[in-house]
Length: 83
Image (cartoon, rainbow, N blue to C red; front, side):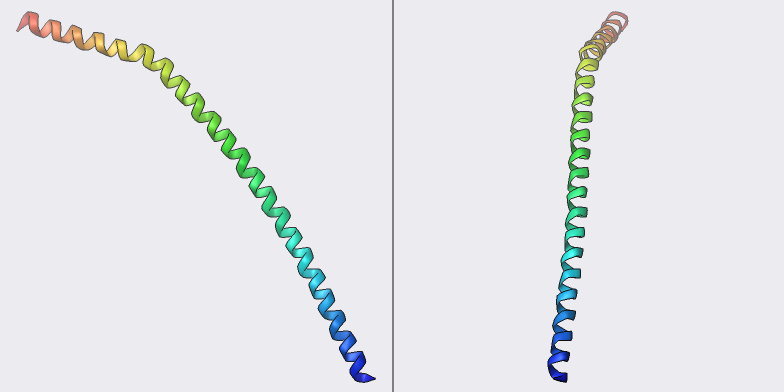
């Protein structure tokens, strides 16, 4: 009888440990899902910021590049005229 009680106690302990392990796995899974969602949101934000940076660069380059070309041409003109 004592052996049966010991076996039952061990089986109950194993069952309880498995329940605890399963609960911990579920907690870890929930944490992992939260991290994945947070990462996804950060990536979306990063992509939007990169798109804004590209748009701003395009706007600035429409003005800056012709301005630089004009300045270089004027410098060349002055160099050729006075030297």
